[in-house]
Length: 205
Image (cartoon, rainbow, N blue to C red; front, top):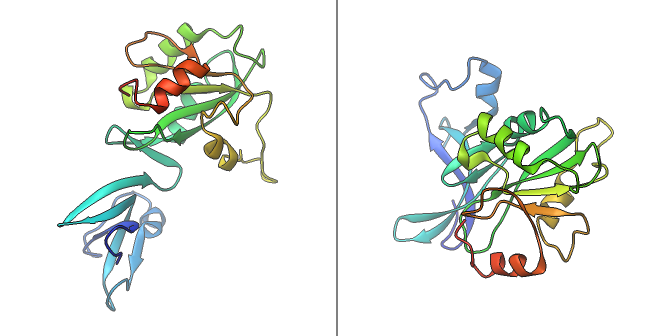
């Protein structure tokens, strides 16, 4: 258990005789922790990281695993990637959550290797219509980064660590970044001006 001000993984106590979440029993077992506080207890891993703020209240911090939380909803990166990869101008992509100052959770960002390797000839309107057709509003990518290639592991899994750390920081990222600003019907190139406005809560994401 965490102390006030500390963050920890939220566990939900369950009856092991009644709990089932997936049709695959092995998938269920991956979400189960046993003997956590006392011998014989059983808890479910929710995947949510919360901070104890006292007075029987907790604050949401982050979503663990290959999902992130935005607008109170869990977003599956795999689901968003599968939709983005269907768009005709996308060769491959990687989806992850990024923090926007003064907002709760993480907004969706996608790094794309496009046919043209840049955003200059990218059909942003067509792309937005495509993702809106298959994804709920909260799962739509708010940021698009265009890269010439994506780093992979020895098993060809895309490495997301550096992408997450760099986020949409234009001081760290030299690639073109586009943003879907609130109240705007299409993606706009990220500039120093709108970047600073985002950092200073000038937009209500």
